[in-house]
Image 1: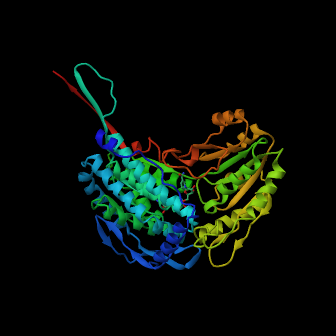
Image 2: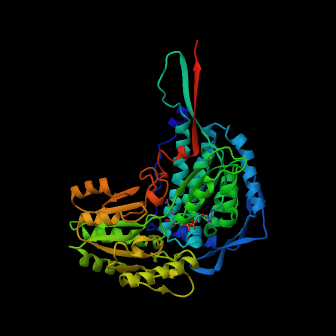
Image 3: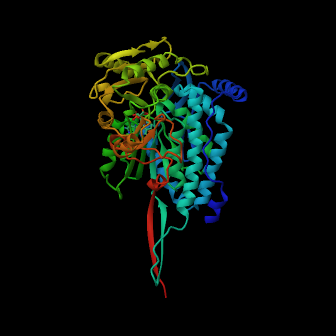
Length: 522
Ligand code: NAD
C-alpha cells in the first residue's frame, strides 16, 4: 500500500478558470448550449443500481428564469428510502472488504471524468443554481479537488499506523469503515460539497444514501451517474431525492444508519443531531453526526488597513454568488477612524456590480436560489432599513428571475438582527467599532464561528486576532471566501458546526473507526 500512495502524484489544486482565455469562453458557450438542450430531462432514483422513475417529481428550475425546467427528478417515497438503506447495507458487506487502493481507483476515475466534463458541469451550475461562470468553475474545481484529495487520504489511512513497540507482542492499529451513512448536502456548493461528502464516505469503505437538496438535484443525479460510469458497484451510492422532513427524518432515524454527514442550515443541523441521538429499536451504535452549519462572518477593518484592499475583499466576500456562501462576509466591522471613508468607498465599488442572467459572463451577480430565498432576504432588507442606513441596493431587479441588488446597510448596531442572524443573500451590514479591541469583541458576538478576516498592517493586531478571533477559518488581508482543498481545511466553531475541516487531514477519520490488535509472540 505504501508503494501505491508513493506512486501517485502529490495532490495539487485545480486552477480555477477566470474565463479570460478565448478558448475557455468558447468552450463555456458551447457547454451552455449543450446543457440547455437537456432541459426538461427526467432523472430517476438509483437504488441498488436500479433506475426507478416515480410519479412524484421535483422540478429543478433555473432561478434566473423559473419557467425553464432544468430537470425533472424522481422523488423517493418513504418505502423507497427504506429500500435504499437496505441496499446500502447489503452493498457494505462486499465494499468494506475491497482494498483501499481499489476504492481509491474508482474515485480517481470519477475525478478524471469530471475533469473531462468540467465545462458542462460548470454550465449546469449556471442554470441550476444561478452561479456566474467563475463561481461555477470554482465549485466544480473544488469537487474534483475533493475527489483527488480524499482518494489519497484513503490510501494514507490504509498504511501501517505508528504504534509503540512492546517486546513479545506484535501490535497494530487499522482504520475500518463505519457502515451505512446518510449524506445530506446543501444546494449552495451543489457540486463540491455534494461530491466531497459522498466521496469521502465511500472511499473510506462505507456505503451511503445520498439525499440531495431539491434545488440542486440534477447535478447530484449527474454525479451519481458518473460514479456508475467510473465503475462504483451497485448499492454503494443510493440516490434518493425527496422532502427533507419526510424521507430525511426517516433516514436519519433509521436504526441501520451509522453516521450522518450533513451540511446546511443551523436549524436543520440541530434537528438532525437531536433525532440521531435517540437510539431506535434494534440500533447497536451511537450514530456519528458531522454537521456543518451556518455562519455570520465578519471582516474587521483596522484603522491602519490598506483601505482599497479591504473594500475589494469585503465586496467580493459579501456579493460573490449573491452572498449565498456559508463563508460570505455579512458584516464589515470598521474602525471609527476610517469608517466614513470606508462606507463611501464600498458604496462606489458596489455601484459597479452588474446583476443579471449568469449565462452572460459580464454579470458578476446572478439570481438568489429560489422564491423562498428572495422573500426571506427581502424581509431582512426591510428589517435592515429600520436597523441602519441603506447605503446601496435594497430592491429586486426585474420581475422574471429571483434577482436582488447588492445591498449595503451601514450604522448597524452590533446586536441588531441583521448583525446576528444568517441572511444568506447579498446583504452587507457595516458596523462601527470604537477601536480594534472593540472590533474583535463585536466579531465574536454571534452564536456562529465559521470564517473571519482582518485587514491590518499591524503585526500586533494579527497576533491578537490569532489568539482571540474565534472562528474555524481565519484570514489576514484577504477575502473570507474561497477556501482551497488541502490548503485551508474548512469548518466552523460554535453553532457553525462540528468543525469537521473538510479538505483537511482529519476529515476522513470522521468516516472511519480504529481497531487495535495485539498478538502475543513466542
Ligand atoms: P438546509 O438546511 O435548508 O438544507 C440542507 C439539506 O438538508 C438539504 O439537502 C435539505 O433537503 C436537507 N433537509 C432539510 N430538512 C431535513 C430533515 N428534516 N432531515 C434531513 N434532511 C433535511 O440548507 P440549504 O438551504 O440547503 O443550505 C444553506 C445553508 O447551508 C446555510 O445555512 C449555509 O451557511 C450552510 N452551509 C454551511 C457550510 C459549512 O461548511 N459550514 C457550507 C455550505 C452551506
